[in-house]
Picture 1 (cartoon, chains in turn orange, blue):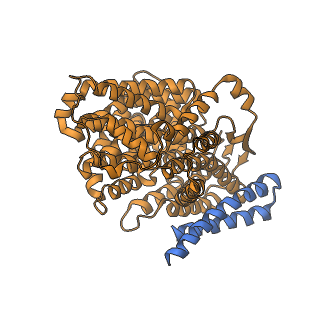
Picture 2 (cartoon, one colour):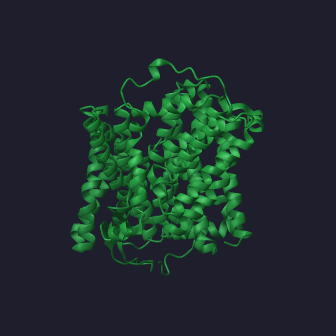
Picture 3 (cartoon, each protein chain N blue to C red):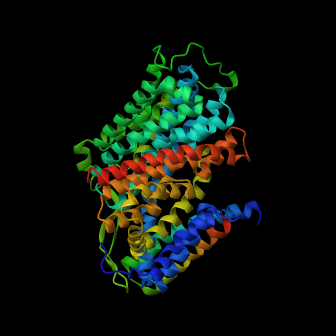
Length: 531
Length: 55
């Protein structure tokens, strides 16, 4: 991919670090605390100036690098736009309330509620929607079940974090796969397998949050069974190539196993007191659970159908993707030409599949007479207002990341980090993922921003690219537990507005512990198993 | 800046980026025109400045 490129000197490394440093400083330090779109825009402008005056890029290379960033953004944003639209349509019809109420009626024991609703169900919501919605949906549910506000918010934050990479219908997974250039059929199952141990650790974290070490002693066997079921189902889903529904399937299986265990005495989750749901929390409309969940049923079916070899082969040419020529900077850094960069395949990409599931569900709703007039327009309006900030944030940050990659800045930073950390890099790697999510509130943004940097570092160290790419995204996924945008959403929804610090301080130790297991696991895979 | 103006500027920045994306590609890759490429880059910089001010 790269030729000679810029020389590895302290000055060049310092210049290459400026856009990333600017992004971090402006978002986190002091009174600045800029939003992601503002920090992304300023960082991209800095990357443009540095590309031209330090790294030997002409206007054509700057534009090609930025355009590649927008191609990748389009790939990711079409998933975000359509999944938020899907959620809004169901929400406007009262379906989210029906789904949530049904879930809470099925579970009685407080530990079971924390594990099934706060851990498995929040992962399911992340799988189908994401973007802070698990916290928005689950934290109020837990509050309604009798959890304290801080506990409800932190359980939702920590509990959903296992599902983020494969959540939002796979947008974060697709981003790390595209940024790293790795084969999805290799990266997907490898990453899912690496998710197993930290996912189970999040289950123990949720139990500890609910009832301290007593809850862990009470429910350890159930946690292992639920966590095992989540992990195996997620891995199997990635093995068949259905990445966009891996978290959804795992979340459903986790809910099912958890519910089954809650019916068996002596497994720590059995409860005999029915939950007292307030009447005003019940949906007034006529949607049943199955009708409310219909778009997701259809989406599962379409996602599975899209993986059938005949369909994949037929749809391989039905795609949109731009071709990019080879670029060579004045410093000799080369990026090879690429055909159909970040292609949107109309029969495989989650965006078109979500739209198709919405269309089919609309026809069924009309036929059953449960469609409310005006739902489509109001859902579309809500979606547009929700995605403006997110779209500009993703666009500018991914432009910055791809421009840095195109002119050799990312490779240079990778080489510098590799020299500085050496064999300890796998331990550090997931925390870089956490940093990205903490700053941007998004696993996807973290992957776009630092994914190439992690790959460049792994290449410089000569260690497993697949393991490091997976480690980064897994770290970024668990970093969602302390992402400021999600913390703020959680605190507002449980009536703790202005007390974000209370929630953050409680969530950080659990996040650090879970991510430590990710780093240790990566170190063992690379240094002991020699992967 | 009033909320209304800020909201408009947020949307303007999004639409500048969206519209300039194909222009950048055509200028740099399809036509390989230096002038068009510089103009497209200037518009993207304008969108970035609008985003930096609005968000």
